[in-house]
Length: 309
Image (cartoon, rainbow, N blue to C red; front, side, top):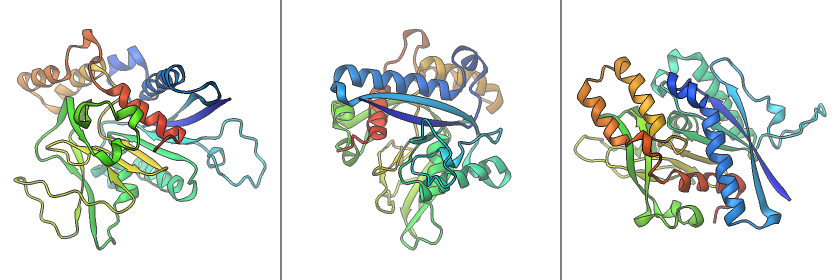
């Protein structure tokens, strides 16, 4: 029997022009990596009776295109509207906007409201986020200004952008949930492509944050941090059975990141030396991927299939 996982991918932005011409919207990138991962798991780990299939439906969020609530798994069908493939998960892509632009971005406010609705009213639907999607999830679902214990926010990274192949030190508590996907990573370190200038912070209420020292991460239960880098202490968020987000781009390879950098350089005012440094950190686009994107994608599919330990 095939276990179909239907993911609504919420396209937040358009990729760099040359990347779009070569590979389409970000929803297409996720379709490629997640479908390939499901096929790999079927061929190497899963018995015939537990085969997985991933179905992707893209939605143009800037155009106001969202999944109808009655299509979400667990919806109480009072009108008896037939739904052939209920939505099992929603995935928020990355993009150039920042959560700090929320007040000036009506589309972002609508997206935040939708994510809160899914989280609060549709417990059978899992939520994924990458880069901007990760940051929006933290703002919408983890941040609570009335929380007397935890302080959670999104900010511009004071140390500059993380761009290129980056090593994330994963939290052991997260790795042990997905031993088949992440257990073989040396020293529980994940190499993943990055392209971001904002970061999520979560500290104990009243903590003074300085540039000299990064304070301990403090998240409300049952949220856990998936890992960290020296300049970005929260590299993803996990809520058991509900949410998995990541700052990095497991859907991207050097070709994709190279094109993002080349298009961003004149817009963001990078000089030639900064662009050259970022391209060096990304790696040679002609040689393909040399990272742990497939391992993280396996964790994502395992999460969607309910295979957490």
